[in-house]
Image (cartoon, rainbow, N blue to C red; front, side):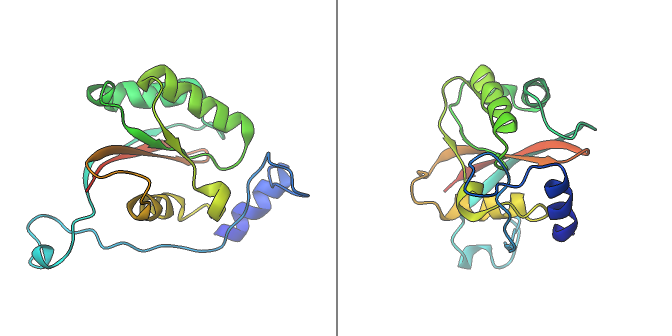
Length: 168
């Protein structure tokens, strides 16, 4: 599946080439996490890294999420967290216009909150992005404990979503 996305992005001229900053930086990799409920028999023997508070998606057929799309998602599902100063992990796949739209919506809805970008460092995989962003968020020592962290995600022509966690 990742090869297909790579070909599609290349045909659209969205691959960062020749050291240009605007565009997707492809990566080929993955991540795995074990997610357990509080009732798991092994939960007491493991360090709890975070609690999942919300997982929300909004169907959207647009190829790229616009500011209004992000605002609709936030207004529909995250209003009660609006004044709680979450850190936001950007979807930001490397395309300048998409990043600008996402950041405008974040600042309009949540105010001047801190944002984090992992894909410029590790690349964009297409299929495993959200899981990789979650794994990096949990490992990131710069993100303090007991903080709300919102992880944004997009599925081209299928919609956008966000995962809200409380990092321990």
